[in-house]
Length: 335
Image 1 (cartoon, rainbow, N blue to C red):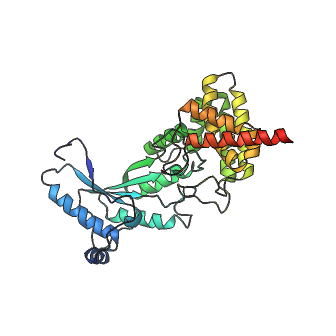
Image 2 (image 1 turned 90 degrees about the vertical axis):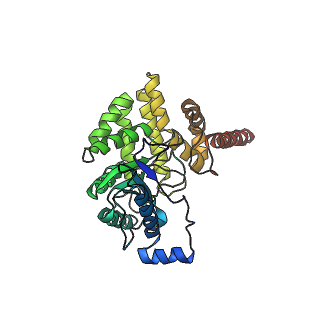
Image 3 (image 1 turned 30 degrees about the vertical axis):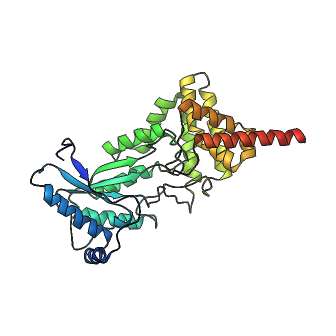
């Protein structure tokens, strides 16, 4: 705080793993204060006490994350402590109050709201295993924000594809989130129409048709996803991929004479090209998914496509798709 005085919140947070201390002293504190979150609040409170006199306008922040997500018992955060609650275990496709996977988080949100003097949220709005995969959370972006506001949250970080630019509808998702953070009761459909008309021009009706396809198929009954889905998730049916590429083909045709708009529309076909080449490679090669994938990647300067260190990146997929195309060509020539 002395060295970097321009900040408001200074973080004292757990590491991003599950390796919390299991010694007898810590276990005793966990039992006394209702779990690992109790130990964290106990610790952070002491830091907050140590700095409050010299820095009365500063705050000490900490996470309620994974093993500290549940609110503690028999202890509350000091007035100069910020709690940042993380939603990483939640299903992105459903509201918090009508999904069995999400109800525990909603209870944690309410519990922290009752004791945290300053409640912030760390939310997740894309697929971190493969950033470009379709994520049909267009409606829950709003309802989740409304739940945060209704439970006294005063700050939020919406984490997207911070390492790359390959997120599905990256520009529209960012714009929509910005609008909803100003007014979480705004009309989402009107906002989407406003953006698509202004950003995709004559292709806008087809982009909206594609979003309707996502809602119809990806949100069908029984579908759930955290922020780490992969290409083999059952929601990505063959029908979704085939119909999605058909719609995107019509969108491209509508702006074929406008290079800037065409480039924007092509970028939105990236996830469909990847899904088709991985799940339906013969169909993908036939329809040029391999070459369009490479064109978009080069055009947008995309390299990293995943947050995970050991997963494939753009060049890996390109090489794999090129090999598939060569093998398909060789097979065809032998017939």
